Each structure stands twice: as structure tokens, then as C-alpha cells.
Image (tube, rainbow, N blue to C red; front, side):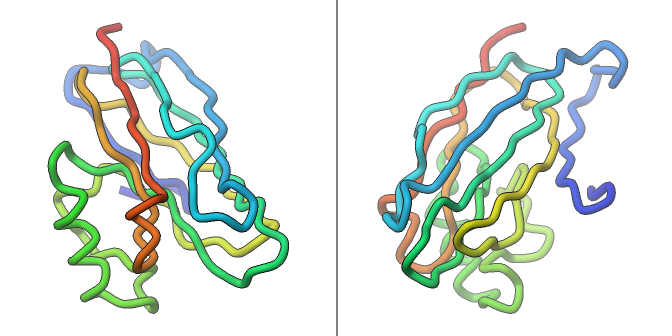
Length: 144
């Protein structure tokens, strides 16, 4: 679901008024295709406000931040390649994608919100072809 350009994931049983708010920041590693940090932690049900900075300065490449269901990174990447660049390297309505940003270019940033899913480890990645090999990490969701 989308609210004014913000990716939102709803979690059953949590009211928005009761949700803890967590601010996270993640960035590309300059012009290298890595996330810094590559491990994030939030409590389940938290309203997460994540800001993603593309800190590249030289190379013209685009990155996104995509949160996947466990064990689905390869499927999300394959579906994204089939969807193509005009679709931000993401298959529209992919049930394996929990939250995602659009592609952003060097020197820019994007902020978006989502609600943290059930406890567990959730992979995140950049779905630009070839980037997911190195540009990935884990969102560790703890019991609140």
C-alpha cells in the first residue's frame, strides 16, 4: 500500500497509535554497491521511518532498498529483472516484497515508512541487476 510515495506494510493486530516509532538510516558505500550498515534491528510492529542515502559521487548508477520475505531474495531479483528498469527492477505486486523504495541516483536520498513484520530475520537488497550479490543485508526483527 502507498501513502504519498511512502511504502507501507500493515501488520495485523497492531494499531498505528500503539506502534513504537523507530528511525533508521542506511546508505550506499559511496560508489561501491554495498549497504552501510548491512544489519538493522527493529522490534516487531514498530512504525519504521527509514532514510536511504545514495552517497555515490562518481558513477551513474541507481539503487533501491527492498525488504524481502525470508528465503526469497533470488526470486525477487529474478522477478525484478523480468520487470525491467522502467518498473524500478521490481515486479509490481510481488508477494515476496514487504517494503521497497524506488530507484534513486547518486547524491540523493529517500525516506519512507513501513511497519516491522513478525519477529525473524528479513533480507534486504538492491534489485538493480548484479547489485544484489554484494548490496544486501538483514533486518533483524525482535519480539517487542
